[in-house]
Length: 273
Image (cartoon, rainbow, N blue to C red):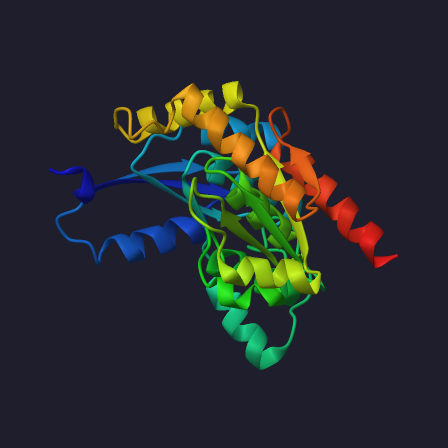
């Protein structure tokens, strides 16, 4: 059985887990011949529980969840993104479709499947935007962003954008590739005044992060990807770009995703006043 035919589904529910388990079983039937394992986690209602669950996850894996508490959901998605694990709210697509017909649903409590507050549509739109504009995709539409995060590879751009999406912020991210000019769409956004924030990481920390990433992907050294001298050059080039375009910088070397997002939100609020 190849790795492509194996998958562990980690089910996370703040109640009995019956709904998510049924959805997983119904979906699994369609993949005859695949080696699927299921790990069920029920009555999950604290950040500590979520952290412990995510730390146990080994690839290939997929996290499916029904969490009523928005902050717990944000914490789960943030941790999963940091580890390169896809986390899906199994009712999101259904609720989104019903919302188009019925308007925003009312709030619910844990055990009632999913919590959707008055900002649901805004958050869903922002999350969709972040996913559609991840890692330099569709830079021609960056003018629609509330904020654009820019930085070298593995500077936490993607998970921060997803986290901001859960706050209703339309965040895009663009990677800075060594010796490659910035995309015209990014330069145009800078020119018209879209908020752009540079994320930087200390070379030593970035080398550590990239080395762990290569191990997780079961790859050896890839053209200096985790080489400290190469990284120093990348970081230096990125800082010069930020200085040249007067872009504010946040050092994320020792910041959590939540802390980085909070700093960006503070900048957005300051600009709005």
